[in-house]
Length: 286
Image (cartoon, rainbow, N blue to C red; front, side, top):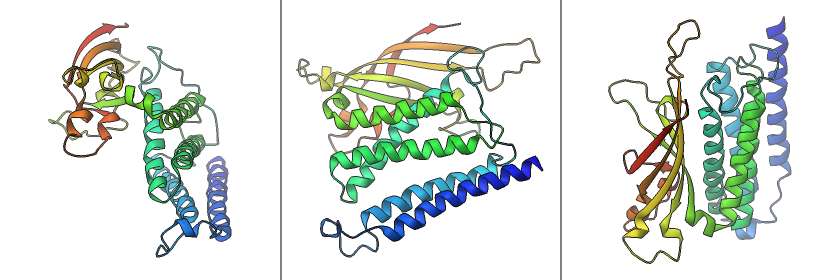
């Protein structure tokens, strides 16, 4: 009976999202059509609504099939932040921050392509990302994960950082937030988004963004400050072995984006750190 009630509540959540999608699409006006491609089937507002509703629908479908959505009544889960005894040593919180930060810029890029101004696209990208992430967190509340206010805050800070970095390009020229993933090619365990054991998160301060750096060679340099945690995936509280370790690192890196943009205009490496393109010095927190 409890599972049934949870399923019904989750179904209501789905219907609310679908209703918002249908109503807003039906009421979408054509006042901005002059600024849009008249050959498009949908206005930019309709496409925005469909994109957001589609992503949320995909999250729900995936959650129902793989994340046990609806199996429990809605509840909160206090996960902690970066403590050694937390589930992932805080890596999941950095993952939420980074995905929200990156997602806001990805959606802003799409919105600009649909005809929104830079300021509109930047704002809507951040709001859409935070809305999608919040929806996912609420849906998590119906599963064994529970609604984590820590995750929700990390999503808010990440989307907020995405908005600020998008609003102030000169800031984005100086500082990146990146994720580094080091896969184990000897196994089939390839999951760059939730395999925290193989992830590292870092802040990159780029010499290229500072006018005081005039040397063309030094402009390829970067200063890194990062964090990672290992040993959490295999940890079992029932055994005496405890190899969990949290690590801070500082390093000197190579600006891959500046190098690649000599031939192609691409900015993906502002968000992804290529493994082994930096020299790091580590400090064990444990």
